Length: 318
Length: 300
Image 1 (cartoon, chains in turn brown, cyan):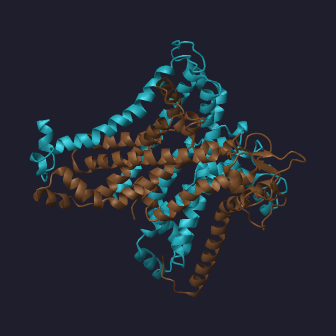
Image 2 (cartoon, each protein chain N blue to C red):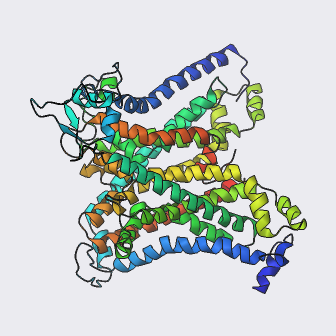
Image 3 (cartoon, one colour):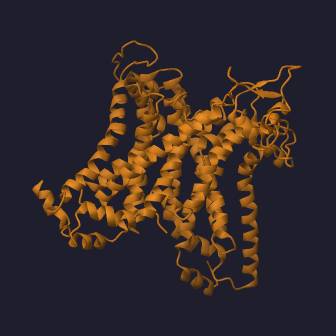
């Protein structure tokens, strides 16, 4: 940018910074709003005009994890002996439903969250593992028709998910893989491996070949050189690729909607399905949303220096 | 195989020790390619076959070969064309919005100020979130009765998502919120690569701001901006999650949603495979253009 010299430029610089502040606040407002709804009592979540100042409470989080039933008129509950978090539910006119043995019944959310974790973590490990070695192969050895293969690998990622999901659904149905963790993991691995190859190839291309060649002269085999020289050098790249793959799998919606319905269902199709019929409890939906978005928000901060590279498939580097 | 050894790079002395380079290359590359063929090409061949049949996955009836009937029906169906028109409208509105907001933000951010890194990262947050979940919580923001948007803008009980005329724009607005940061991110990279001495020269020549912008900034950022536009166009063309979660208005039925309904609600499996192929060919064309520009950007 031009060297700020004149008074006019300094002033316009200040105006720009003020504009940035305002725009940043506007941009973050939706996220703030869903976050604040996650800590509201239900009666304040859908008021008109919207409630902005309120006493935050933790009851939506308790409700998120438990199955509840409405209290019948005149129904007595053991209020005094109940733990603090259960009293919040009583205050909301509900009680936590229990099994015959008195154990608390959980809502559908924790299972979906765990499914999301299982599927995202496993598929990330597979995709990054395969992606790294394939990228190494493309980076260090001559592969016939390399550009065409790389285009093929990329194009598999560009297809609209629904286009692939139709035959996948039929094939998985025939193979008994519908609504299974394995099915979803394999599909997300295939989806992410193309990304991992492209991104990792960029990172490995940046490691000088001379490092391995020196190791080979010292008596390392090619595999040892890869393991002991290339992998440690590529560690940052591998970590960044892994986080991107995790976020993609974590956020994925269309495949999960079509290929899972209960046992292996992940959080993205589950959270919107909570709306269903009747009046939704937006505080619970917001609580589920906040917990679901939190890992991604943390990862975004960890990734901040690699976002450009990752989001452009490694095409643009700073 | 022997000819391949000769073409390997001369620096590889390990060919005689441990696994040969060729073996390692094959071991590293082939499984991934095979895996991708199984999970991408094979399903597509499978659905290509079904696209010539009247197969319905909800029944046990065998699939009958009906030739090109599905394709003819689809291409002569005005409803399908309207799905494509809606998609095109969505692509144009959302990508234009993203370019204006994203590039504008990049111009603003392209100066030094305190906490620049933090502000930039915060602005990038929306694009990292799950589209389905974002669509869901924007429903709360858009709610005509208790939504914060109507309240903040003083619009009373304005209907956003239940309004057939406006729903598509409401979804596109959410898309703009989510993906302007992407255009901003790429534009910032472009802007920071513009050599400073060009601006110094322009200021010595007392060139006007507008002149500097149109003759120096824009031409130099254009290639990277074009990548952002192509990428967003492709993604907007494929859009499913946001519109599907946010509204069920027929005026927001983009191609992906039509495809989903045809395949999994109406169970016209054969016909949906044919539509999937029409979409596939369009996407491959856009991808081809995209990859060309990616490679060009890499060469620079």
